[in-house]
Amino acid sequence: MLKKLTSILITLVLLSYTASSQWIFRSRLGFTETQNGTESRSASFTFSTPDTGYSYYNIYGTPSSGDPNEIRKSINHGGSWNNVLNLGTSDHYNFRFIESLHPDTAYVVKDDGEIYTYATFNGGAAWDMICYGGSGDINDFFLLNNRTAYLSVHHHLIRYSDGDCETLLNNYALINKMCFLDTITGMATSFDSGTDLWSLIKTTDGGRSWSSLYSSTDTLSQLIFTSELNGYIICDSSLLHTSDGGLTINRLVTPNTEKLNDLYCLNDSVIYCIGNNGEIMYSTDYGQSWILEDIGTMNLIKIKMFEIGMGYVSSSDQYLYANGLDLTGSSQMKYPPELLITPNPSSSVITVSTDTGIININNIKILDMNGKELPIINLGANSFDVSDLPWGVYFLKAEVKGRVCTGKFIVK
Image (cartoon, rainbow, N blue to C red):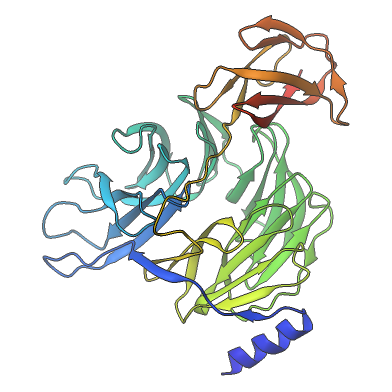
């Protein structure tokens, strides 16, 4: 009762309100193993479209028959799941992260004391081990696009891109959570055990070096940046916001009374946060006012939204809930492909392609940081000579299947 009264008072001050919940149960991500009643220890999910998602679950101890730790796929809004990956009955391992940005593409990280990343590029029909992360505690996995991912293990940062794995950092202060905007620019939270300080850090060279923007004795547990300037950071039960790239950090006034666990941004101004005791809150004006929903007493741990009022959340007891989905038909969203610019950085020639193999790329333009269009030399086959451009960062815009896509590259 006290929690409800407190929430109402705060939301009145914020000119927001407590919304009636439309979140409905879809399925349980984990399960009770039928032969010995062993409960799933952990589970997680990812959806690339409102229809299609992947999930994993892990089992306590050794199950009575084989190893049921599985990766599963749903094509009906999480209502049912089919196994698409089981790595064998002799392994004892845990899945730790699972992410997908396309219905046919998914990544999962496996931890059995050694860290391995597996990926499918054909909807789960086949999986390949694409990256070995060594041993140690795994902190975070971030999927930038269908072909590029980052893995933070102990004090190392590893990047997988188009079949190649590269260690970007060795023996660095622990990178806890990360968010890359492109292959050049990224933000992360970091913990230094020597000073007991948490920091917001930034890279502008693809992750090879980082500079500190903000430090705190409070835990910085999650972050999302929608641009180099605009970002949100969870600090226990508080939400921090920056609109100048981390130079100044503001603590937002929010209506939650519980610890925050995850967040998701639809754009610069629209942000969702979830936390303990069933609290979901969202803002459409950079966190200046909020709508608070309460969907029960469970602790909410992961969220994925597609638009305001349409998305998924999961709870610590491994239940999946959905909101605003057309469960009678297909609401699958089609996303424009990612532009891939190689090599990047470059001092001579760049080639433009897409992560989905589309080669028909039209109306290519190169812009400087001020948005000024620059002349380009087309060498054919989507290749361009950039040797006459001064050193710096540039944007490339192109039309792919009627959609305008943007990429960033460096001339060195």
